[in-house]
Length: 64
Image 1 (cartoon, rainbow, N blue to C red):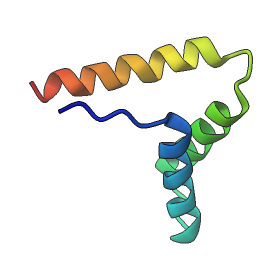
Image 2 (image 1 turned 90 degrees about the vertical axis):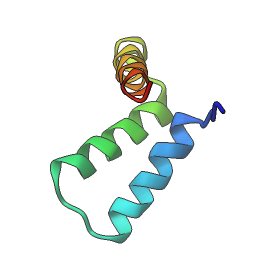
Image 3 (image 1 turned 30 degrees about the horizontal axis):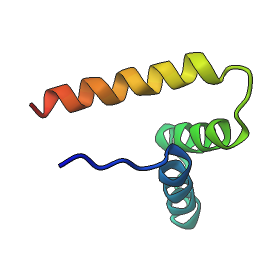
Image 4 (image 1 turned 180 degrees about the vertical axis):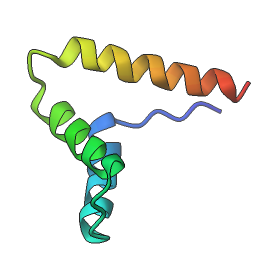
């Protein structure tokens, strides 16, 4: 079964969780950066999107 979820929705939920739990580590900073990036759609969208896509594909391959 394949589940598709919007990156903005995923990182938005993770950002809300990080803020609510007052997380202050590097992971929380990365989540908040990615949420802002995907929400804004800046000119750096393509390289960062490709990096996230490659990471996602690599994690999916680990499960197979």
